[in-house]
Structures are given as structure tokens and as C-alpha cells.
Length: 143
Image 1: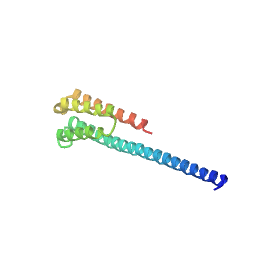
Image 2 (image 1 turned 120 degrees about the horizontal axis):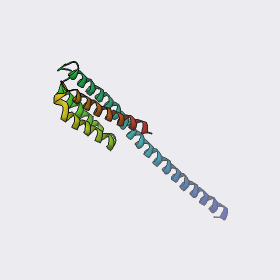
Image 3 (image 1 turned 90 degrees about the vertical axis):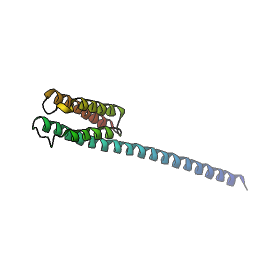
Image 4 (image 1 turned 180 degrees about the horizontal axis):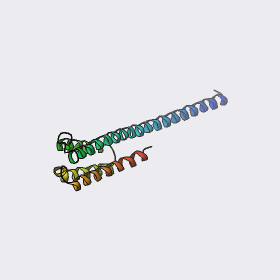
């Protein structure tokens, strides 16, 4: 084999290796990007569900306190919504999970008196607003 042919074979080998490296690099980046996108999608979906549950909880508190409606303002329904809030918060950030747990603590301390105590209603609504604020900040930070 002459030198020219050997040189050409080496060039082809280098080109093949470089092509494989670029393909592997591109594939790796694509997989990483898809994982980040999936994580953001899951977080975003959990956040929107949390916002819905929080609005339902707030409506429940107002129905119990201002309307004296024991059906729409049932504390059992409130416990379910608070529990769902804590469960969904696991799909988000540690800070948001902590806020959801604080909401659960506030609900636990005040649920029995929401029918007749304005301070209990305010404490629960403030805690709901804290969680909402955390959700909004998280949604703005997603890329």
C-alpha cells in the first residue's frame, strides 16, 4: 500500500472517530435537555394543580366562616385538600414543600374554629398565600 492510501485511510478513521464523538456528544446533550424539560413539565403541572387545590381550600374556608355552610365548608374536605397540597408539593422544591407543611400545621391548629373565629380564617388564608407566593416564584424560575 502506498503512503497516499495509508494517509487517506488514517484521515477516514479520524473522521469516523470525530463523527462518533460528535454524535455521542449531541445525543448526551439531547438526553440531558429532555430530562430537564420533563422535570420542569412535572413541576409546572404540580404547581398548577396546587394553585387549584389552594383556591378550593380558600373557598372552603370562606364558605365555612362567612356563609356558615357546613357542606361546602366541611373540615373533612379541608383536610383532604391540605393533604393533597402536601402530597403535590413533593414534586416541587424543598422550600415549597416546607411552605405546604406549614400550611398543614396552621390548618391543624385552626380548622376547628374557622366557623366562628376571624383570626383562624386569617391565619389559614395567610398560610395559603405563602404557598401561592412560593408557587409563583418557582414558576418564574423554571427554564
